[in-house]
Image (cartoon, rainbow, N blue to C red; front, side, top):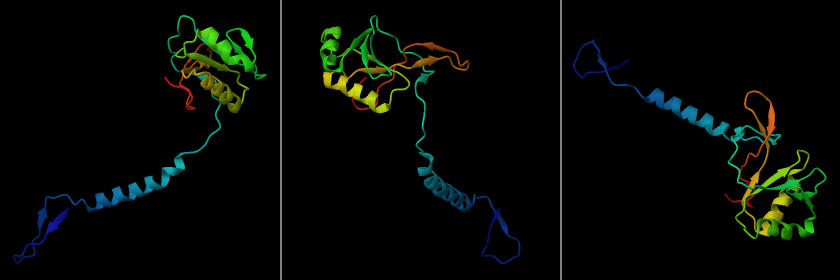
Length: 161
């Protein structure tokens, strides 16, 4: 408790009913400094294994168009293999020229990130910007897996929602 000194004579000090906020401000400033120092240390690059997802699947269109990047880096649209030089023309014929068609991109777990980005660049060069990444859908809490399309926007700048 704080005491206030009166100008009148006497040894009896009157109690002050005001809160002394100086220690509170000191604690807040110390916490602010600690968080300012610790915040940059919280961003750490971590190697992650991305293929599984427990997100709720987005509704699939009636006839989804799957583009598959196999482990040998070959491409397939639907079930037919497509050579890279004729990729754009085959994709254009499969979508009937509609550049707003959402392409469901699947890649083998062993495919590197660079190869996946090359395929996304092929899609962007062909004019297809709506890309949904497909992962292995896992049931939350059970560890059992079922195949499904979990669509997430591609964050390379070549995809748009």
